[in-house]
View 1 (tube, rainbow, N blue to C red):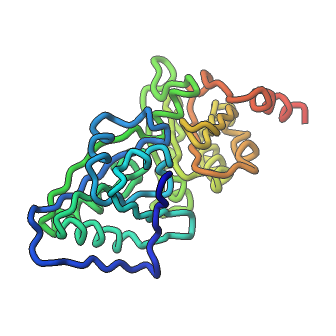
View 2: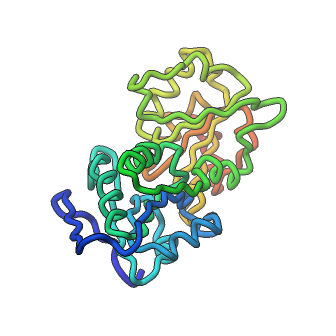
Amino acid sequence: MSRSSKSPSNNRFVVLGGGAPARPGEVWLVGAGPGDPDLLTIKAARVIAAADVIVHDGLVSDEVLRLAPASARLISVAKRKNRHTLPQDEINRLLVAFAREGLTVVRLKGGDPFIFGRGGEELEECRAAGVTCHVVPGVTAAIAAAASAGAPLTHRGSAQAVTFVTGHAAHGDPDLDWASLARPNQTVVIYMGLTTAGLIAERLAAAGRDAATPALIVVNASRADEQRIPTTLGHLAAAAEGLSGPALLIVGEAMALAQASSLDEILAPVREVRQ
């Protein structure tokens, strides 16, 4: 990139005003998709190109950020496990403050703003402050992961439903309906579940899901370094060991159609059986 994306200093921003803005500002909650810039919607690319300020997640790729105008201010509010650059409440207030300066503010979020993206909280904050807020949907990681692996999330005869959950809920906050998730002929997609893969597999199996149910792990969906690892529910924890990065766990009969991303990953289940 020709310019770096700035992170907040000391978790505080000061937005300086020079009286009433010449025009009202607005906030756009834009889905940046899973990383591949070709998966952006035309509307998302147009809004990014018109931004005065872009407040973006860490999962937004550099290729997508390069679509911003040279004059735009880029602000990273990256969130990682147990490490947030800026608390969500302050991000909410930041969006409103910039909009009140008469600026076009793009809140650029990996995937879709309303799929585990806290877009609803930001929308509520804008509404409460009387700031116009628009939403531009994006391709969520589960859709991209399924497409690249050739494994449909719904499939006649083997997946009549699909459910998205977060791995953070595996510890019981909030509690998941494991009995419902364990029913056959449905696909369960777990976001942010890499570190809790063993617990998730254990709870699904305890609730009655067959250990032989096909499963798929996808790391960095849609990106050049994407990894796809077909496995089974019973081997999910072992398959997740040593992996890092943004990942999805997908469990369901339709994952039998998944293709691995390398020969080593194709042979991994065979090696597990031999061991």
